[in-house]
Image 1 (cartoon, one colour):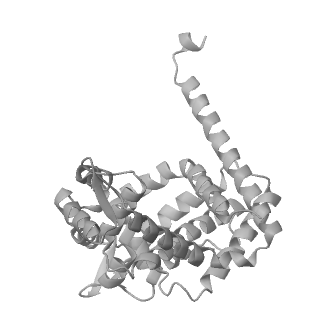
Image 2 (image 1 turned 135 degrees about the horizontal axis):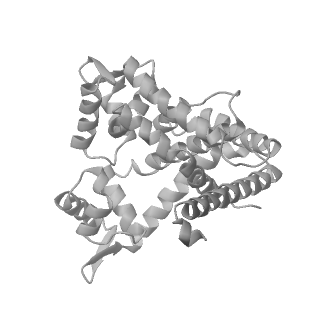
Image 3 (image 1 turned 120 degrees about the horizontal axis):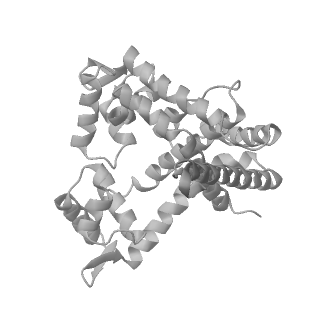
Length: 316
């Protein structure tokens, strides 16, 4: 029996392999439209359309970001005419905001469609397997909140899109649904997002001091004092302990984190039940082959670019 975690790891590898083919050009479009730094609230607003995006909804789907940074994103989007507030703390996309999102996805999807992928028949099969999981995931009763997944589904290009574009869409949908599943796994523990993410980094042994946490998570908008309070809460709960000046996971913290991961997996993989064992093996094989194909093409492009930029005398 194939391990679903193995397939999930290959999904992440495939997403990373797709990224170089569209990221630079698509991000350039965002900069031109002054939307790069407000991408998140634009996508979240689109995801709840036709309803407005409320601050509460934005906070619930982005619990790891500091409130002042979240507010700055919304204010910037308003200042650039990408969002409009029809009432206090209720936001809708403007026509300019819609154009910014469309420009990004049109650009990204065009690049993905042109990427060097597997033969059409194999890409169609991969798209069909992933679509079955995504549609089953949409029907799941839990978790009750699927805000990240719903925002991702807003960008679905439809069945007429190239198979590579549909594959990338479904991979992205599943990535965002895993975020929703993980949020549901820890929010019963009376802890905020900042502290939970600090706990995660300590658990992974990726950050073990306050300065490490502030540096590794600088994009969230917190400083060392903020993480000092987070670590204080985690220590009081008995989830972490200090040794030689560094924070590490405690036995009880490791056990609790194991439960959270188990709950995440149970929620996340529930939709995968629509595939039988043969389907799962085929899905895994196709993901491996696609990831390898994209990675090899990227290496070849880089090697060619390196040769083309060398002086003629060196090439000779």
